[in-house]
Image (cartoon, rainbow, N blue to C red):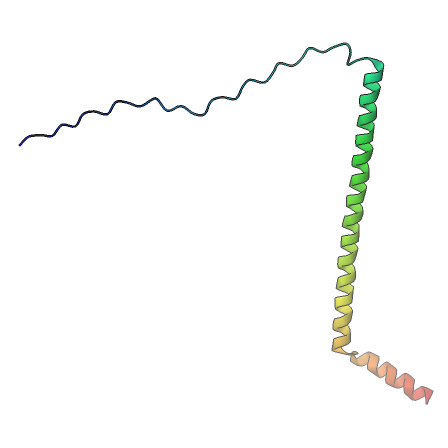
Length: 105
């Protein structure tokens, strides 16, 4: 009995992951041009405008939430009113109406 020998496959390249992304650029040194009065004033104005916009947006969202809550309450009130109408008047109120009608006649 002879054994069949298969030639050994040559090893492939070692498994590597995807290449790393390029490194981030270094932070530029703080420059004195940023700190001039006009530039700082512009950035503060932009920040102030952004805060005002965010405040207005928050108020708008609160208003929308309030409207939705009120709409749900009105829908529930209408539903309960329709159920009351469908049930008909209760007995004590019918007696009251009959009694008041008999006195008026």
